[in-house]
Length: 131
Image (tube, rainbow, N blue to C red; front, side, top):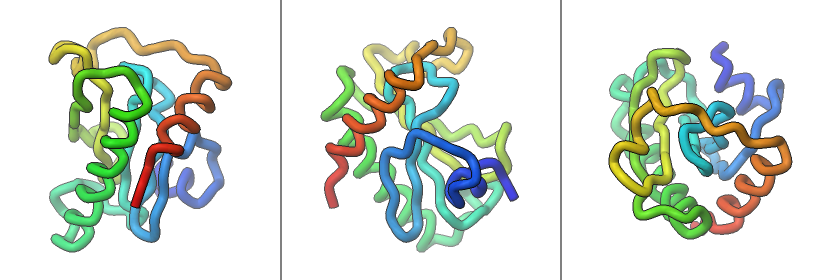
């Protein structure tokens, strides 16, 4: 069971942003920008492009909804999308608030945010998620 499956199951705490019957979104604990969010399918599949078409499209539609919530709650020009998936064997999408293209570099220093700051960010984004 991946760490993301354990987060979804509630075994590991997270800063949840949104959830539906098929997908789950939560703040990255090592963000490269304030509001950096991970979007994952609840069904554990190692690689994004190994998802069946139905679950892939559900995940992308969910990520679009979460990205709009991020854009409405975190100051940014755009929300960038990255799919790496090398560290955790569970398909996931990074949604990253951007001011400029270089903000999407994972070699940038990680943001150090307190638990209170992370909770506040998660609440702001969550409040903007609409169906």
